[in-house]
Amino acid sequence: MNTKLLRTCLLIGSILSAIVLWITRTGYSPSLSSFANANNQIFYYLCLLSSSWFFILNGAKRDNNLDYWVGLGMGCILLTNMYIMPLAHNIVTGLTLLLAIFNIIYETSKKERIVNIFLGASAVGIFCIGYFTPFNFLFAEVIAMACIAIGMIRGIWITKT
Image 1 (cartoon, one colour):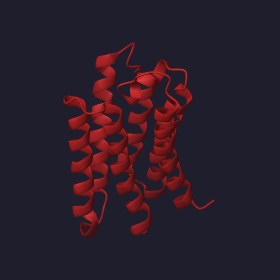
Image 2 (cartoon, rainbow, N blue to C red):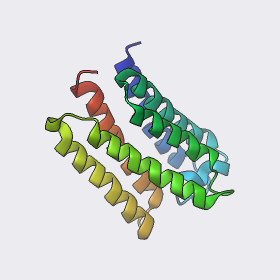
Image 3 (tube, rainbow, N blue to C red):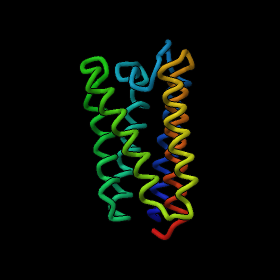
Image 4 (tube, one colour):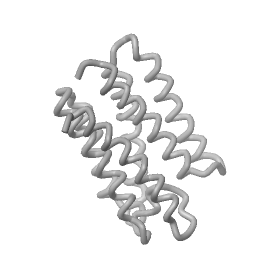
């Protein structure tokens, strides 16, 4: 399979598993991380594992250390269960999100940089709106993930990798 296609499928699978997680929920869950102990937690793990593998494969293809760090951050989100270590989980999640946004802005051509700055600002803005207001935080997390995924997919298919 083409690595561009595999990496794209991993990103799309990550977003789809987050959507399926929302659809198959049995009760109210305020965020993606709150599904760590839910009945449908398999989709939570699938979401983060497919994202992690995407960044690891992307780092290997582009010879980019930032991708490896984001992939490691995704794995650390899984390791720091929000019910056991909530502060560590929030710190790791925030740092991973910021590193992923920095990655889509820094590792792009100057021609595409303005689009990725907009996508990164949109991801941070909607994430903050979801976190600090009564807006549904889970929905905000999925939108932020989609913004980053769009930036990464654009990087795969538009630039020569």
